[in-house]
Amino acid sequence: MDISVISLFPEMIRDASDYGVIGRALERGQVGLECTTPRDYTMDAHKTVDDRPYGGGPGMVLKVEPMALAIEAAREKLPAGSRVVFLSPQGRVFDQDIAREMAELPGLVLVAGRYEGFDERLIESCADDELSLGDYVISGGEMAALVVMDAVLRLLPGVLGDEASAEQDSFTDGLLDCPHYTRPEVVGERRVPQVLLEGNHEMIRRWRLKEALGRTWSRRPDLLERRKLTDEESRLLQEYVAEYEAPRD
Image (cartoon, rainbow, N blue to C red; front, side, top):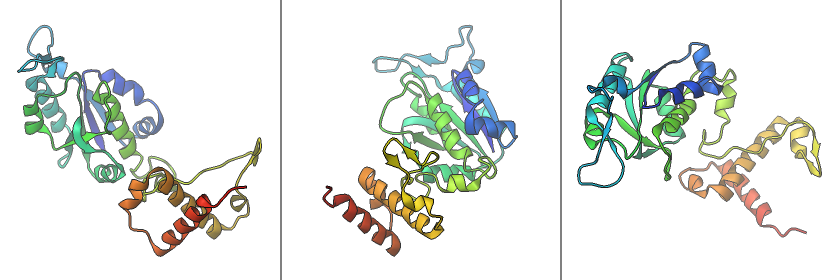
């Protein structure tokens, strides 16, 4: 996959991309990454990329021309079928399903906003999609672009090394992840659940599924509302709820 990020601060992307999943994918040649700044496509000595909003109000708005030229230059270098995605509070909320959808693409142009956002005509003429991380405000789209990159790249074959890691992540099957434990067996007065020590793989599978269902029920019930449970999942969730609500000594 080839990715191009349009940003006023490309060094933010380059510096963060040295680490973790993105850094490994770049080092192995599994992804190509280019950062482009619209300042390189301005026509004045001050490299102006923003201006005051029509109608008044605080802040500055990103101008159409330098942004559009930067996007077009990035798009021309990517394979056919690549998608231009604006990181915007007005976009659809990014989730695991969208990450899977994007992992099938040959390339992405991720457009990071700043200040009061984009001139709407830029979005109308250039955007294939708009994505938001959620209902909160951050200072710019660079961090959102890095989140999208990390979530998408970890789904590409060979990036994680162990394909099971991606398959078992939270949200992969619409549930939160189950609890995880490692050595030592006892920390203070807290012990690893006995079922994980007995080597019965079927019992471990059922325990993990039950804990994932229960954790989702208690912390993110909205996810369960969108998911059709199997008969086994319904039974395990009922067991979890009964144990959760049982009186404790």
